[in-house]
Length: 188
Image 1 (tube, rainbow, N blue to C red):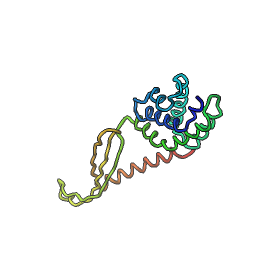
Image 2 (cartoon, one colour):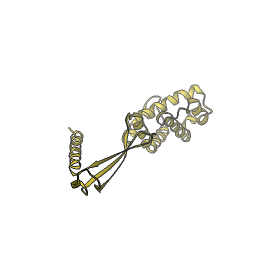
Image 3 (cartoon, one colour):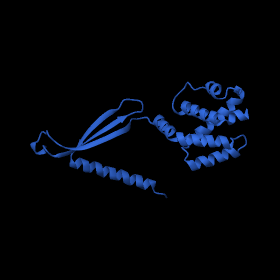
Image 4 (cartoon, helix red, strand yellow):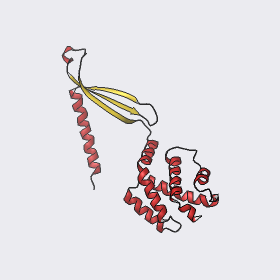
């Protein structure tokens, strides 16, 4: 069995299957499907603990959103642990994470988002052509269009019009937000 569970190609396929099931919402990927397609010679009672170990490792890596230095340290610790993984398995896991980190992170972010998010923003400066007061005609206005929506749903569009005073007010508020973020990001 050890030789069969060493196969880089099979382990890569297993990690892909686990990621599809756990992070991308494909419920049809079952333990039996993974075993029969990737490790057909391995009995279920031997495959089950291996699957649980790989699932745990993948979830640990994803939930910590490990960078490559953290990943290296984590996998090294796993190879030295009693009943851990081999260095070949660590190499496959590392390669898998390097190529799938962004997609898995995006998927986890989308799953954890409750409200709509900003998908796009466009703006232009225009001249007002109609107004209740003739003095306001031909004054410059900023027009901003926000595309808002949830993942997998159709977007909604919000159109905003600002005169010069309103633009200055928005810029002042954004400066305050920037200052707050800068204060929070400074090391203590």
